[in-house]
Image 1 (cartoon, rainbow, N blue to C red):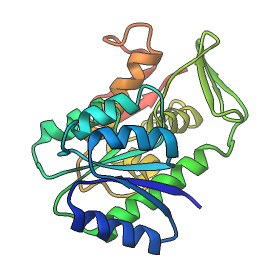
Image 2 (cartoon, rainbow, N blue to C red):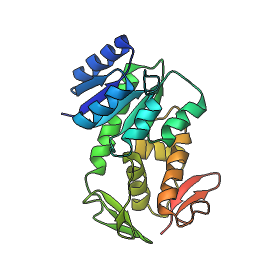
Image 3 (cartoon, one colour):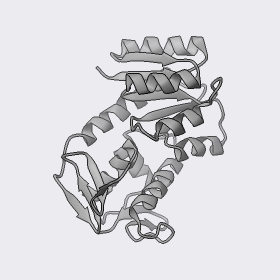
Length: 226
């Protein structure tokens, strides 16, 4: 049984999410403030975290940033703000997805299922080993390394790089990558792909400002070169 942690200070929404997640077959742990969220996440080690941005004490952005230093579980952020900058901040500090309030609980559950499914698929080797330059993808051990040193990647960074690695040289649009890697329609917002590509470039490119591996094909999308 997958364990989901929900961090939300609105008691009504927290109860609603816990009820529906339990009904969907998940073990649920909760927290209502940032400080408790940090300690609970480290103790409970959830498979996925649903994290509200507006929290008392430490806000959700800071919780996400601190947890990402030592934990790699998928993080879905809940935000009441519709500004693009708030969404990008969440992605920049390590969130894998975001949902803007008010939202459909059914939609959130679908994203939870898709994200967990993608993570489980990533843990199942599709190709034993792939190499491009000094980068090695060892899907059997779920490790990507550069010059023999393991890279610290978020679940979505891993999924994206493995997918592009398996399909090396093929150009994919942002919409195709959302469908193939994230596993659902992303309401037309493709910025999350750009953010994850930028993160990966910082980790695998000799010169991230002049990428030669994760290449942008102008007007089309991205591809991975060998």
